[in-house]
Image (tube, rainbow, N blue to C red; front, side, top):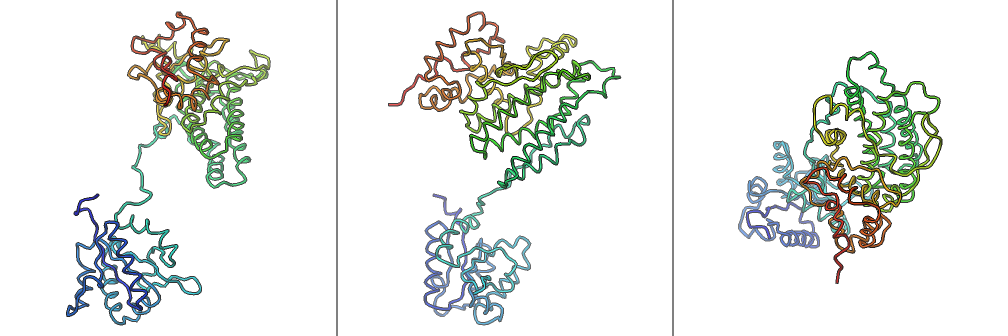
Length: 485
């Protein structure tokens, strides 16, 4: 219960047109009192012998009154406009205070009646004010919370705090204008408004994304004196706005698109994304720099896609993404074939060369880049690391082995286990999450498969330092060990 000082105090202004209306007003006042709002009402607080006009003026101007509730019907509106009887005097005082007040939030019109044409019965001085509809018993009940929220100053939707300007907008190397902007805005609007044009807008946007990515030739650096790693990092910074568009799109799709369609859209998108890594057979403008840019960008988007799916609790779709085969395109290096999600993995030779060139001893320069670029508020870096460890767990369970090296976990030194895997200690949570993602029904079976597929030497290779233990981060020994009674 709030203390006495926290109780708002209101005065009710209304027309005493009938006994029934007075009873209605008193009922609303009693309900407000029951909800912790102190009510000043003439039926309770004005006694015989008191000056009713002085009482009205005092209530309207009293600083202890947080709000004046104006219950307006046709009678109230007419008396106020005609300046007739008590309502007329009261409305003169109220209208003067309304015009004097800058905020104008003290006076709340509550509509009790509408005309036959459906127009609000409000006096002229309230005609432009936002009102609360009590014109029927059903509406009065439906809008009661709205009234309380206004009185208590607890709006249903509060303006969020102002965030930081995205770092990529402050970077002079960013492309001034992406060809995807207009396409994305159309898709964003269609998704949020449930328009029938969503499939067309989605295809238009993604076609433009892939056309743009395939057009990157790094020409502006052909005469540059920069090192390859510097060129690659410049290109990646310039692609941040595109990455943000893709992440925003993935987050919206994951929240509002039905699972069957989402699975199809996600897998198709990832397959086309994967094709960016490999130069087509007829390519005559492919370079090692371009290969590095596409490889890092593809790897990064895949991590974010898994993180978004897990955050939206789309565990079945996560399982599909991590177990399906992707058709690889004909390229300079490969003939068309199928491959699994391992193909999204990337090891950057250029960033490792930068590590040596600068005399650094960084465990994973690629992890440094991914962390530095983790500027998206929807998917923070810890969520990205959780996605990486879940991808790793799935990869290590494969009988064919895995080449997935969880780069981002070099930053997991202060983490014992990630939330999804930690909660999966309980059987109920395990079956809902990890069992669905991996397709393995029990923790014991996961542990057996894990040990069968991975030797001790393999684990030692994955121990980045003494502070990072892969098995503990996976919560491997505790998965599915607590059963509810």
